[in-house]
Length: 513
Image (cartoon, rainbow, N blue to C red; front, side, top):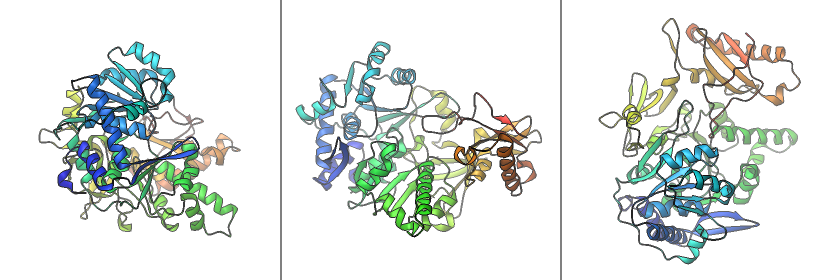
């Protein structure tokens, strides 16, 4: 695709339709059938949503969309931005009161929603009087499907690449969510910054939540750019079946999912040792998988090595919502296995007082109606303060050591990154979840143990095994970083909807040492 011809999300959809035409863009299950929609149909149906919005209001508006990934979701998203309006994708796992909060804070006039939210709509209507239209993806009355069937496509609006395209609410682990403002320019720059990442022969199984910009940019925008077919995973409970059904060549995962799948492959190999483990992996992934991209959390080098032994390359990138999201992209260079990838073209990165800062056309406009937070995140000359600690190698690989706001500052003045210590537990099978923090001026590890491995153990035995593990980890640490206290939890840590542990837990585990 000619990069010079793509300045907005509307340009991307139009150019994809012109270049790839009747080729399948989206495959998804509809009951017992697999429905397919082409790139041309996607452009037409998105512009029909644009027609509806133009008919609804002649002024620029903000529309929200909520639900799992689907063709209808995507047409509502792109129909909104192709009409020059602003889209606000909401987290489908939010509680009702949080959805209400974001609808109000984002000044929403139209809500497109999955029928899964039908029961919640009366409450939203009562609490959000400024939302004038509630449009389900399907169902009786006006719906996205009915708009696809009855409306005529609008002409794409004349859109300034610098204009606001989307507001994405963060799911921070330490405070209230902030609305990240991304211009068309931001998203297009991030989708176009690299080359040769996929082809029209590839198919991608989209697994991650669609409201996350990691999924949206790397699954959806890149597929539009390269002509890749997007296959929709309709449920995490059916991920295994959908891998075999759609047989993807590319998949984006978070480390937790990758680790879970690997454990299933290992268990199957143990049950049938006569079958090579790599052959079992091929069956699990459908037989055509070329590579796995990872993001969203720390990826242990051990996981990468495990998949490499199966003949499946795996690597991680790095970014944040505020950068649309990619700052670095996956590097399959074995020498950089513990990095978070190589800096993407067009992005500048520098280290200031240990903090990673980035500057590129992908960087956000700011936080919606939050000048104070914007001033904290963006310097006057346009550098994004990521809040991540790390360094850059001579080969432009980025290495993350922790989060600035999470630093443990001990009474002796030493600064300790809890993430650096938490990552030491990544390959310990007995540890399911871990949080490291300062307590009474000593470094404490609070651990939720693997329930399957410890189900027949007493607390004293679990504590002894975990303490033995900590003793081994401490041998690799300097005195200042030594873990001197252990707490064991009987329940999982409280997490955000994106499964990140909230660092300020309402209750602590039982003290063992």
